[in-house]
Image 1 (tube, one colour):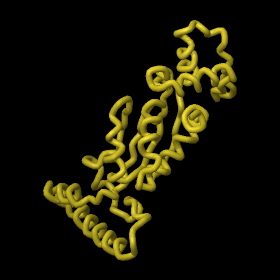
Image 2 (cartoon, one colour; image 1 turned 135 degrees about the vertical axis):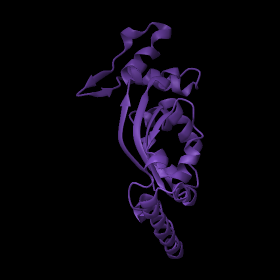
Image 3 (tube, one colour; image 1 turned 90 degrees about the vertical axis):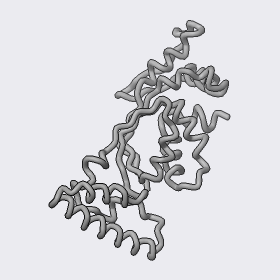
Image 4 (tube, helix red, strand yellow; image 1 turned 120 degrees about the vertical axis):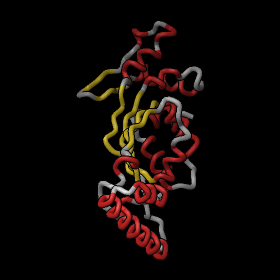
Amino acid sequence: MIKLERFEVMNFENAVRGSRNPLNSWNRMDSETKDGKFIMGPNDLDLAKRLCKAGSDHRKFIRMIFVSVDITAPIYWWKEYDTYKVATVANSTSTMHKIHSKPFEMSDFSVDHCTPEALEMMQANIDFLEKIRLDYVETKDKDKWYSMIQLLPESYNQMRTCTLNYETLVNIYNSRKNHKLEEWHTFCEWIENLPYFRELFVDNI
């Protein structure tokens, strides 16, 4: 399970203008912003496609296009996402500080592909974690807190607010679009639908 919410794409206009700096061709810029939405003109889109097709050395302008998004995903997915450390920032909900602040429930975990037997096992684990949580809330025994942390399954969902740029998203898309995990397919489909991503990197082959 993965959810991508409250995303925003920023600095597109400045990035496109900067792409024209090497040839001083600002007079050919024909993009505009309407009702808060950036719309690329034919000249700018043609230049952007050519730069993107020429490779990472030529498409430096996409490093200036930023995306912020709230991602809720299981720990096993976050472990793979954390491979991408360049040009990313993330602020997460705190497992260390807030793990005891609410009851454990099945909805806290990604179990959408579990077998019935696995769900039974997960429910038993959740019940045991909840017992430990209640004991910790009452006693503040640090070993109880450690027990929660160390028994927490990798399917536990965490939400992070992430900031990336288009260059990082291109790298993620190319590396993960055929991955075994369904979460990566959902993530790559989300990337495809960002403004002009498909035109620049999917159809522009």
